[in-house]
Image 1: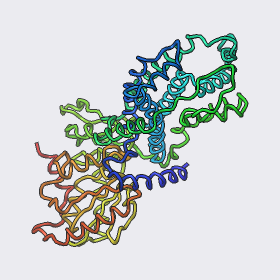
Image 2 (image 1 turned 90 degrees about the horizontal axis):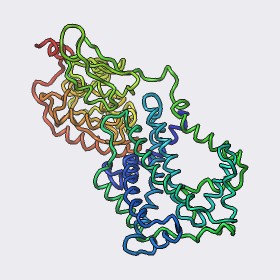
Image 3 (image 1 turned 90 degrees about the vertical axis):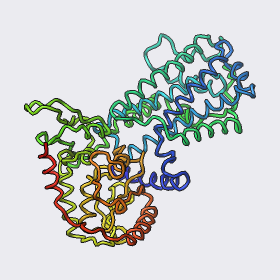
Length: 513
């Protein structure tokens, strides 16, 4: 399983690097696949409402032909609706592959994964009902094969496929049922999206404005340049002719035609069961699962910063019960993904996963500095283990590795600067591709915008720099390191900088009233 995740991860890393070169990390569509899927859902709702006004249950095919014949609105709105439905499937699949490759499909994230699988199935079901509503040859094939499959389900008094033998016209109730499902299913989609993001704080459901309008413009251009085709009308008395099948929604047609019904059902149930149970079979062995964060309640100041910064709402503030008054933080282990973001949020360094609190980091960086002995012209790289700096040395620069750049306490950076390093380059995953969701966001806020627990004013900001480089962007990190080394070499060493006992300073700060 780990080998499969690494293989998919390497492919995605190359694609990410290519998209970053074309669009920059802010507008990389692969980073925003989930938000793009949400926007496409809204596009489908708006265009679907327009099409619904002109759709007629009594003459489904004829009404679609009239819509497509309207060159001003109908033709391109139908095209946008069609292409947005295809793009939604692609966006959901890309989003799913990213989460799987990054190991974000088990534990507290299992609910999001399973509801995502159900979302994909619901989107496909909604698409199938939409194509049947057109009642062209593709709709005829989908309806007849679907009826053949459901004939083995003991829920109906007589085989459904009898309705498609052509001895009598299809009743209007058949098209009404498809229309009802096509309208009702999006309501279910909305509820599923709410459940899907219910365990994350500040869910990002809208991509950056430039990407939002870019996706909309692309769909519109496609609808104008390549209008959605209108296939020949369905005829139950004739075998279906060749049709422009939609690969995203009719991919199952060849299998359903060639294989026995029982085999089709078996493969379908197996495929969806495997997808739903990914959180079970993709989780690492118990010994390798990271432990959740813990709070040292004795030293918690009740500042609420860890609860505010937690990307998964896993930390809650409660009234103290020890007679001291005020608030104390408490972690809900079932919601904690062990990202360590709270570690960097705590000024007293008293919260975080086991062996990864701020104090643990300071102990590790002391040993690191004693081993590497950085000088006044040297740059130390603090690298995210999942980004481009997943190594022990980079072009001769020592690398202090972290599970997430956003989990690195600012005292670690201060220690490196004040103990002799010429500069510290923090290599982070690009925002919106952080495995901890908001690591780069809070990192930048703490370093340069005084967010608790901020980098102290006594640290020269010219000696601290952040670069965003994904796993496939080693060249980007190399160029950033080369440029930063030149800038550091031009700086003069400030008087009075040297090693200080940051742990003692924190203990003194805790003792203040």
